[in-house]
Length: 244
Length: 259
Image (tube, rainbow over all chains, first blue to last red; front, side, top):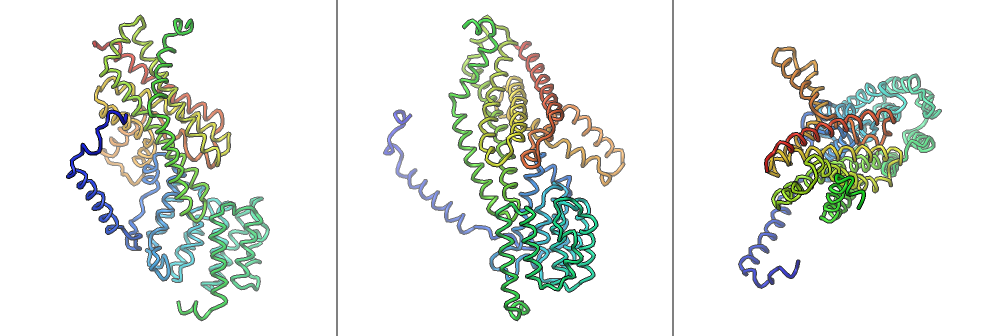
């Protein structure tokens, strides 16, 4: 193939300069135009689950997870003091609902709802997302109880709303009756009423989830460990936490 | 030699497969596997949970699309080259029937599709259960056979490669999305006006003419388990019937045409 090509010197110098200039211009333009991570206001209205299914061309499992990765990029920029604080939770919940309806067996939407979006310092937004988790829980209690258990914990320790926490705990106790559900979750009301601080409760819960073999994903384990460290730091330095 | 004389269809199929293997197709497939694994690995790094599920479902979905794209373009390019090089006229001068020639080519393209399906299923063995992957692999091989049949039909009928690729892609995308389109058309929010009724009826009529590609070779199988043998056999039968339909349509056109 090389034998049939003409030597490099056959290319006019002007063409070589043009090629080099075009490559340099393209690189410079791309670097200058590099788009930032999407802001909270960029989150578009959610489509219906049917439209999402149409967009997935039948690959619902892949689409649901890709949509979650895409969704978590909104309002998560490094310059945000608190990520996801400015998101429109009405829109966000509509997205989570549509994604969950696209692949009801995926645990990603409810995991993100409880562990990421549920930890918003705005109590109204927390309640919105907890309502969403509670509403979706009853469709598949034996798979979805960890999200509601975490919501119960946050309702008790962050919202200081013990009746709400007990309502979630009672729902888990009565509906999540599968063999894979650990004993502490099946006795969730007692667990909520125990005189433990948030860190102790979170440690018991995480330990229980690990012992039950529910957390097999290394990314999820790393994420939860980071969250535990955060709680530990926050409880060790409550003054700084309140200033947030 | 004896077998070749008795089954000229197999001889044509063999040379069609040899043509595919000697082209850049295997290298392109290898490059696609590396690119897909890199992309799905990157996405898994970004996920905060279900990273493994994300990796295997995205890799499965992308490899499926790549396999379909490759078999479609290869088939159309092969038919176009044979026509342009006057190879087809040479083959037609040989003592084999037009039907044998057409079906031999189709069988060769189907074997090429099965080869691609095998290459693309192998890396997924790392994450998926072998039984689930086996069902996915068989289904992908059948799906590529259907697309090869469609591409061969459109390449013969339309003559222009771009039009043939477009028509095959349209058939494939409609086959994969028709269930979702039907669900949207049948939604109570769509209304009950005469126009909506007509649209719903048209969508249902279109669905009858299309293969149900949304339910086959699904990435869900790699995560949640493949359907049972009976269900899989029913799906494969549906694909086989559509391959037969496309082959019959292609034979009808090929036998009537003057060269």
